[in-house]
Length: 196
Image (cartoon, rainbow, N blue to C red; front, side, top):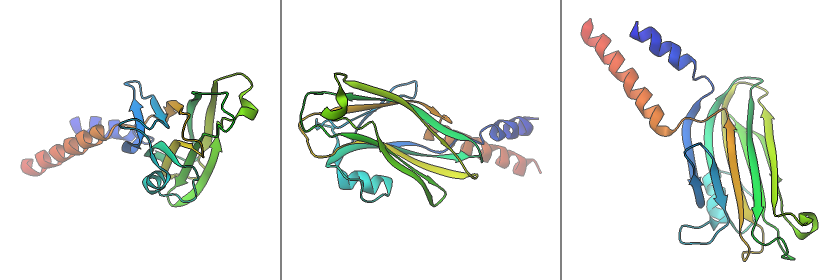
């Protein structure tokens, strides 16, 4: 009976994370799964462009410094990967303000999407200091989706920006949950082995 309950539970995780969410740079995570990324150069601040590119496994990102998160999810064909975002500027009046946010998606080994969005500049600020939006992407096939989301300073390192990511869907499981599930399955297998 216990084995059946565990199998049903694991079947319900078909869109759960393959690995936990990892981060680089100035990233904080709230208990509700909201991530706050900044271009802040504080003590535990953002990192240089090359470090973000290495972390995400991408080239030609552009920018000088930033922060990013990455994770992996199993996606079924037709399933949507989505999140809400808010881009905040510290100095909307700066004439050379050019920070941007980006998302990079690979399904298995195929590059599916890479794009910048929420770019802040004096040309599009129009008296507001925050931009908000929603990102959606639909899987064309089943497989493991590797995603990277981040924020970068393009040229001006004086003015900081923040990029808040919330409501990531499907919800990624923390790495600790996978360790627990793996251990649980190991105990079930061990118990069956000793019972025979």
